[in-house]
Image: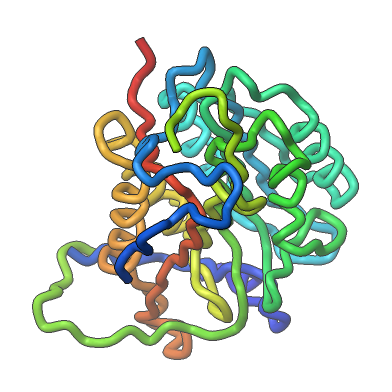
Length: 294
């Protein structure tokens, strides 16, 4: 274990080797509502646009007063490769300070996304309780990542999926795991008719945020192989993005992290044999398929 990656302030993921383990509808549902979209009008997001969209990767490795995040460069390379293969225009920011990071998000929100299917933002950094994340110099609130893109803040993304993936600690707690007899260790390591009507949708609609771990807990990262969450995201997107719906894929990501990994630090019982459970908040209103463009 990289001892510098287990800070007393709980601002980092833990570095470690890992172990891979094998109600009824109302009679008049639209009454009293203006331009309510009928359920079933479109079950899937439109992915027939000219472009897949932009994927912004924010990779924080070095900090002014925090530990280096060894292994994150591999995560950056791997997730960039997978997203490019799916058709995204990948943009990478390495070690931005808070001003640069927030400015880049504002600038991205100001671009025209009319011909894009969706937006992806991946953030890999230190984090701690109360949804605080870190730029290279200062902290910021996680919601500052997506606020520039929701509702009227980014008109060209209204009705389009906005996907955020956050690899970072969210507190000090360690997941001890629970015994399930059928799990065995396999190998060692680490919604009136359509037409011209305009529908009013909630400002927070079509947003998805997936965290590497649930509130209050540590997130694990291998110094040479990358983080459990980002590597699992890469594996599942790479294998299934062409044929499976996004939430199906992300459920598989959670399953992979939950069942295939545990920490392996035999010389430190406090952090040895610990688990991790990703957490997802989905406000998507349709199914999302990222099938290859013709």
